[in-house]
Length: 422
Image (cartoon, rainbow, N blue to C red):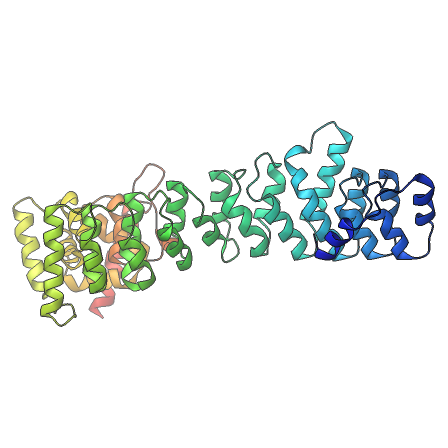
């Protein structure tokens, strides 16, 4: 409610009898009719009459009056003056939990219609006021909340997306999957106790700011699988590094992975965590010493031939299975895993590099198939080794198998081989 309305309501005539009220209603002077509209003694029928008053100030006073009848709300909800509708929205929103579209009560149905009209208002500010007013209320009709959550203006959608208890995980997941307006995922990522399923959708999505917000949300439930996928992309997004380091629960391999690429001051911050185990603490200390020895730079990478020979040796020893390769990925040893794929697939290392660097999902899963590994590993290879965006990743078939026929995967390998041969 605007301050001038508060002033008027505070200065109302203490008593308006029927004759005095009738006299003022028939006056040609807006200030006289305004006296009725701001009087605590105003009769509902008088306020209903004033809901169509030609003077906007009078209609605004009617909009905020506690005695204005429900029938007048629907008139005011369609008023041509934005300020009238905004004032009404601020008052009527508190009635939202008491109405139901299918309620047989005529007055409640009228209130529902007024609410729906305001939620669909052409003025963004009116819809925003509604959203802010009912964002954390329980019992608000689900369809009204959904209309606000899907609003094309973020200032309208954001409050209910972040706070509304009416929205279910299923509602929010559908909104995230349906190409929402920019900022939608950020609003959802701020929700208290965000579920692991929603965190996975946001964490593997392409809205970078939303992932940053998710990582900063200490109450969000983030599965280790989701965190691994975030870590695989994290080196190229410095904004994720500090919130990752500060996550309340991190596995040992996540901490070691972080130590590979975060700045030295953040490694020190990792060392201050109270949940560090002895071996992990020692590994962090080595990372700090390595940074010092190299002047803050990462040491020159090991030649691929050394990884290739190591992989051949481990294969001969029966120590190059999928579990071992997943563990190497957990440690961030991507160069070794690339060499291991070449050894297992019996392909030239250069060909494996070409397939992974091309970032084609069919090529990557064909390489993993050729290496005798599962589609589960192929999903991780697309994310961690090929660094493909989540929207491009090929997922397993319904049965959990490779989504391509064997002949199609053979063709992919031959295709890349022909390219390399020139």
